[in-house]
Length: 612
Image (cartoon, rainbow, N blue to C red; front, side):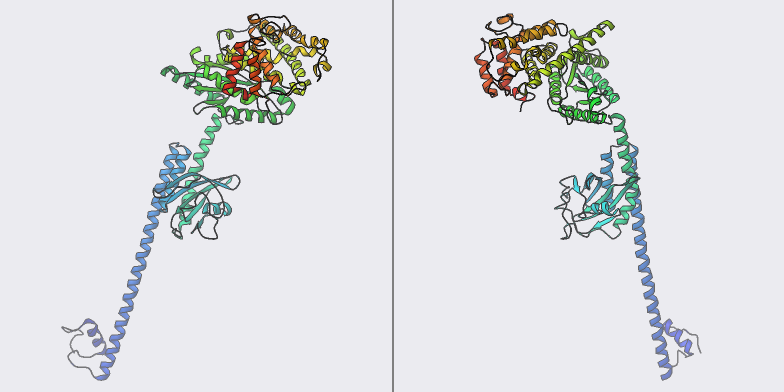
């Protein structure tokens, strides 16, 4: 018998012939042939099975290798994304920049149309603080949305775990305005801090059901690490804000304000620009704390800060620089414009009552850099103007001028303090007079305010305006000597009663002789004199009447006509101005009436405090 393999015989046939001990050169018998065919069939079947198993193994291995490759690639992408985020945080990038970068990396990792960083806020609301979207995708139309199950972020808020919503437009899902009309699928994972859930990172697609089963896991792993960067970036900013802002009002604090003041003063000097400073101090604030408690006092400070901030322009700096002291830095602004701005701020505080405590006034001092040597000197001069405003009646803004300069000696300071006590007592009496009659309540305040507006329109200096304001507040103090039955009478007065009333201006001037400047006392004495010489108590005529008395006469008459009184019908603003016009050259100084008409034409008379 020859070898198992002959030339031209297939190796499989040669092996089977050898196993059956059949000579390849001899034809097999029937039984041998049948056995041979069976063996060959089984051999081929086994070979097919082996080949199938091998091919299957190769296919599985290829799939696993592909998945492993994708896992490695995804991990590398996540690591690269984290490195980019970490680099931004290390460079102390602003939180909004970090949030936007995280949103972009979320979208890149999941190959999504949009990425978001969502901050959880009070009232189950979410705020989008960072976003990225493909150019072809319409961005969310609003940045705040309700955290419901309509989005994956809402489900994260409710459950605390990663979530996927395959179809935002499904019937069982309530539409959310922030995502309506463009995005159909979303996935989100929580960002956690030691205090709980800070927010979420989220991705969204226009195609429903477009996120894979592993999207939540991938996003959770990224969120756990990226969340550290997000929270740290925000925390760093919050620390910076706390270091530079007043914790009660949120305004810039004393240190930050003086840094801004020095920088702005240097910039203004270098480029020849204008700069002004206004300092404010709440009047008589200590009694507020004593009567209502410090918590209510804090609420007043917070509300005052809000009102002042509402008056400021973009680029201005408003700061709380002391207990009840505020500063307003006005770049690109001269003293005239700064005075107008400060006056608006004063009215914003003084004319609208505060909750619980009622009406509170504020005084202001204004100075421009052109009058000062440097930033420190600018602050000192504005503070001197503020002191002058406080010392001359309060509830007024004063511009710094040469007449304000100088330093008081200890003796002078004691004298001024005594004068302040006396002035406070007289003002209290004036308020008592106003309060006797509901028709005259706050009358003196309104007269003082209108008198200052008239004097300003006539070109008076801020210092004289402050003195006129003080005289206006006190002009009726002499009525304390008029009997109540005469003062409050709703019927015609007898000659004796009219004489008693006419004596109040002279009595008021005598009460003020040692309390206010002589000129102020003369204004109080002469505010019932007439331009034609028919007034009292001295029968002065025309320019003989002190200018402040002529202004007070118009202001008082206008307020009397436009306020409800028991003895006369209240007139409209137009009617009151028309009446003053008719009396110009008779009862009133024509120049003052002309100033009243200008104020009326500009609409300024509609801003009177206490007008209902």
